[in-house]
Amino acid sequence: MGADFFHVAVPITRSRDEALASLRAMSNETLIAKLSYGTLYLEDSGDTWLLTDENGENVLNRDALIARCEEAINITYDSAEDHNRLSGSMRINDCVFAVAGGLSWGDSPDYFDDLCIAYELGVTYDESKQLKWVDA
Image (cartoon, rainbow, N blue to C red):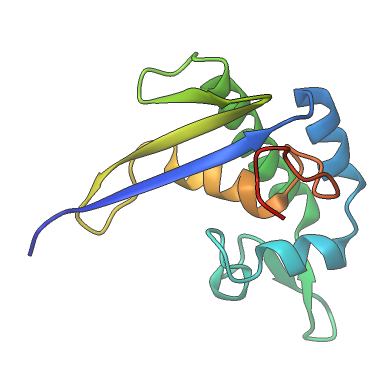
């Protein structure tokens, strides 16, 4: 069995503060919809992101999830600002991308999961705007 190359590129058109504010403003339903089957896989998280209430219902552990997502967003911006040696940035026209990747033998390369979480949240860029260099 050989290693596979994994790569993620997260577009950044908003400031770090705008991204964090967008995260904090998300409803629980939106967080669940964006993160349920991605890197964090909420449904299989045990007691980390979903807790069981007194009625036996799963409820979101919002404080813990927001803290993890804030960490991922900060790592993404640190990568875009070239503060990490194992991740970096690239620019295509007017858009900066935070990038991470590397070889994987079943594990994630450094910072890969963090950038995936930021991408899944969609808070680092304005989803309503199309980048001018992307075909419609």
